[in-house]
Length: 223
Image (cartoon, rainbow, N blue to C red; front, side):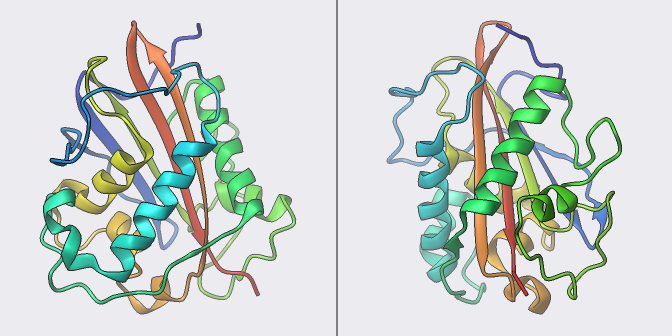
């Protein structure tokens, strides 16, 4: 099994997002385990391959949070009582392909960043799928990643690591009051609220014998 060199540590969580073409600093927290979660990872195989089921579970969970944020304050370990309800996002297969390709590329080429080792951002990858990206909201070129949030986590083999865990940690986002991750996922600001479609890539793998994952969330809008 290939080992992935990432800025990870045991039982820490790393998130990164691009916001107005500027990368925010990665945030490290402990994975969030809600009262309803199991401490086991069930049937997840940590094999360095795309897990579409976890991507779909992350999608469904995020839509529940968007529609009724305050109901998920405890689960996300962040006070969402003042957040405005936003419409559920629509799944898009082209965004899914771009997100899965990006997550696998990070795993296969041993990096964790908005730009790949060639200096290319994910916006160009989105457009390459045929997705008619609405580039009016943000400047887009080969280096930009305006529509991406990235998450990676690692822990012991009894720590819950799922797609839902990735969404919770992106929303919590190190307890910062205003951040790109929470804005991107929940549509906090007017520009982010205009984004309507989503695709998620979630890759579980082993590092030093322990369970890890990489998650790429793309939320965008077509012309």
